[in-house]
Length: 402
Image (cartoon, rainbow, N blue to C red; front, side, top):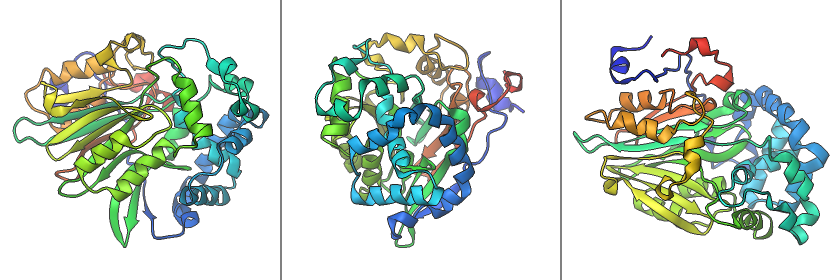
């Protein structure tokens, strides 16, 4: 039932998830052997892991694509590779396939090139093409998961408290939402940080490092912004063999306990692919638009002039026109999720957790494949996360409250 508060801020385009559910939570002991860290996770999710695996197998594993992809990539850092091996042994899914799944984000950034409207595989010659053929990548592009996402960092003008709200939008929603969980990473018997992740994919997508100068973070997909970006990403992935983005972010969260150093690390750590890192701290926050080698630009909260910063998946500061042709909104093709969120935020006097939750659930902001939602505040320790009833997760449109 929609509360009076939600009715007071919702327009005719407001939707509330009627089947939002709690997110499963598991401790991940970093003091344990890497192969044993995810025993409880795999035991809980193994049936769903196999549903996902069988769902993508006819496409992703066509012509032994994943085996060649894993071979060309080579092993990950020892700790990470041991985790992958453990996940494979615990689940029964082949190691090559578990390894290939770890590269889904990086490959996703190939989906919507900003400059190159034709696929660059014919020009990707040399030793890389010997093991990862053009035809394999070309044939796989249509099914690869697409990440959307909306991130909002906003300050309550009454006391300066900063809240961080996020929607994680991910295709294959009906298979992936059943795999979403919160990993509470433990060290020496205490919580080091917590992160939302996906079973079988021990990288971080949303996280919070608690403490008096702690921080929250989220990842949003960012597509290419210059010609040749696809080729650069593939070089980073297969030739330079840089650490995968999500693993690099996880190590930042494991080793850095304060906002300023975290922002520096999220700004400068070499990545394989482009992305947005959205970060909040105690009375501060920022959006980092990442290139593989550093920042493309930064949008600090204290310079926004509005008391909030929003990022979806488009470089709106550079007038990326694809923002206006986004097909993912529940409201339909052509609705800008960012502008819809701004309209609501501009109409209120103060930011509250309830307001952010309502914004994230507005049908112009929510995507058809929103599989996870969070409202966080590191100053107060707020970690309010849920699994929304997204359309592609099986929610019938008649169940939407508008």
